[in-house]
Amino acid sequence: SKKSNAERRIKRETAQSVLSSREQHVDEFRNLLLTARLEYSKGRSYDAVKLQRQALKFGSENLPRFDDNSLVKAHALLELGLALTAVCTDFAVGEEWRIANSECEECFKYATRIFEMRLVSGKAVLFRSDECWINVSGEGNSENYASPVPFIERIGPPDYISCINMSISCQDPSKTTVQALTRVISFGKYYKKNHCVIRLEGKGGFCLSGEIPIDLFDKLSVTLENHKAVLDGRMTKEEFLAQYTPKDANKPEVRHTGLRQGKMKNSGMKLAKDIEKKGLFQCANEGCHNVERQPRQFSTCSRCKWACYCSKECQSTDWKRHKKECKSGEAVKNRTVYKDQNKDESCLQYGQTQQLLTIVRYLHHFAALSEEMMSTRTTESTMLKAMVLPQLKDVEMGTIQLGLQEVSFVWNALWSMTQSDRSAMIRRFLSKEVPNFGFPPKTKGGPDFDVISVWSLKAIAGNFAVVKHTPKGSILLHDDERLSTNGNDNVVYNAYLVIGISQSIQSLLDPMNTPLPIHINTAILPFKKSVVCQGTVFQRSQSLSKSFKAIALSCTKDQAEMDVLTHL
Image (cartoon, rainbow, N blue to C red; front, side, top):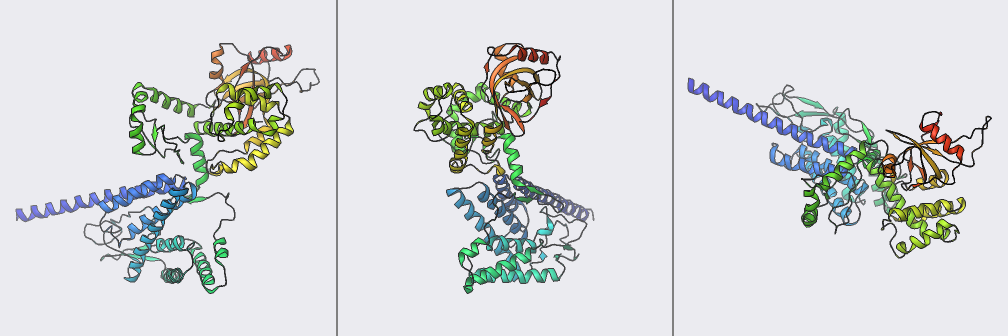
């Protein structure tokens, strides 16, 4: 009849609509998990945690059978626990570490509980209908199979084995841990013996081929033996903990991107490059001193996209102050300057600028108060003691930002010290002071204070002639009196391609309104495979030889050949 045909058509269209909706939800859930894993592999652990939490919430609201017996939910919990572990390892300290570590332990416990419930019910290798694939008829088959996770071979048994490995390995040995390890090893052997086959519930009898991470059984067996040894008295707890202490804390960590054909990424290197380019911002609320630990960790003002806030409370508190710069366009201007700097090859990237200025701030503070500086008897050190020292006394190291003039006084005093005194001062600074600053290691984006020892040996201070500007920096000719002459009795001067710290040297010299060559007094330093100007320059025309001026002028007019050095 027409009525029954219409009913069947409506029923069929409704079923197709439900299928389409579920497929969209599965795709969105899978993309959340994959994006989170990619952020994790890049060292952006906070972003990974945020996305994993979104995935769990989204799954609870939109995926069918996403309950306390779901292998998909256990997988999402395991991924969240992994991201939280990275937060604890890379960033968190104090109360933040305690909270993150507690949440991490709860994720692993929750996931383990799901796995062991499935194990008891005999469904550890059976995916329930609608749990891991979408099908109108409710039957599993390869034609309309859709996985809700990026790395399907890991779901179920492999997740269970990995979860136990991560959650129990470093726990205090007990009868409970021994039982859990024995149980998971026994199950793993059974799973491997049956060729790691995972079945999908339904008449189609569709099967998947899973896998077990390489060497995981060997690790679990060693862990089980260590737990038994502690309980039997054959090993002390201290010896047990030493088994899980990294032998090389500075060894690069690699993390998987989450796909079957995905690559292992050096998370510390990725994070360090991210920080070098984008920088780390302090909360814009003047009463808050929180600083990002990964790029773009804080939320920004939705209007100007510049002011960053660690919480909604800070943003609300700061609005009275911020709305003036936000509405006036000042904040947007700052954002434009930030973007332009990262596109400009003639100066450091924004994050590199932050790192260099941080290194300089701490070095200058320590150097000005050092015993080596106090014993230096030069005009430059006398100026420092009179003009800078009063500002730094009784102030915590690195907490004060000196003005440009004071910075130049400290630089001049540093270069006026003897090589031996400067080297001794720097060695003491690096060995006794730097470890107490609390910065992350350079392998994870922290400032590279070790470069200071290179500055002491390779930095060049004195008179220079700026002879040319290029898109990749300015060419500076160094007036070095120690240079010998060649066979033609022509003086040989070194030319260097030099970049600025936060702006190009060209823009730094533009206010002088002087044509090239411009003679200046400054210093150049090696930093991040570049030669960088120290940031303070003074125009200089006296005490320069006629031959140097003549060669500088000929270089400007392209009448002389130059071998331009790009490193010190």
